Every structure is written in C-alpha cells, then in structure tokens.
Length: 131
Image (cartoon, rainbow, N blue to C red; front, side):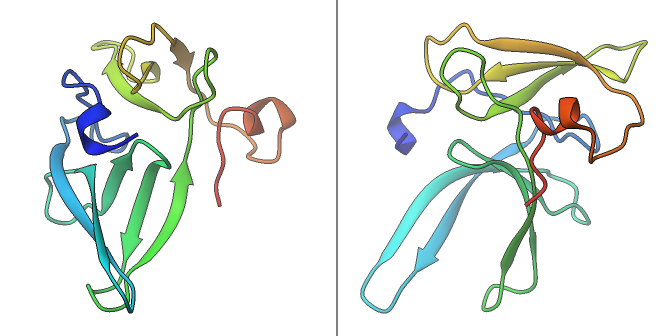
C-alpha cells in the first residue's frame, strides 16, 4: 500500500502503552535514491515502537545512521493476510484487545484475549512473529 492508499481512519495504538500513535514519515536511503513511507510512532519519547502497513509493529534501535528494525509483532487479517493494528483495548480487561485490518474497506478484525504464554506454542505462533 502506498501512503495515499492507507485508510484515513487508521488509528493504531501502541501495544505497550495503549495510546494513539502519531503519523510519521520514514526515510530509506540507498546509494541511488531515497524513498519515504508513512508509518505510525508511539509519541512517548522513550518508546521506539512503530507500525507500518507492510510489516505491522516493529521497534527501531540505534541512531539515524545505523538504525536496525527489530522485534516485529504481527497479527494478520483473517481475510487478506495483511498486518493488523491494535484498535482498542478493553477498559477493564487490558488483556482483551481488538485488532483491525489497515486496508481500506476491509472488515477484517480479531478480538484476542492475551495471557502469559510460551512463545514456542504453535497456537501462539500463528498470530505473532518475533523476527
């Protein structure tokens, strides 16, 4: 998806802090050209969690010259397989989360009640990817 094709109503929450993320423009430079893409960043200064439509959630470590993308959290849409974003967290049950597809006009969503779990569990691996 290009920047223009991302839904205007896309309002991802930071999955660590449950607050609205702010739109930012990411820059990717190579020897011949520079590209820009829309992403969302947690507004807290000590949080480095981002959301982008093609990767889902990720964290960036390092400075601008040597940044490294790590720790991808990806929940996929049951309709088209694209990454979903955290749309809502239940006010009384913080472990109950609603995920929505970022593709415009897609009705895909998942309600997931999260528990402490073993990351090697096969049922968990279908929803989360950690690399």
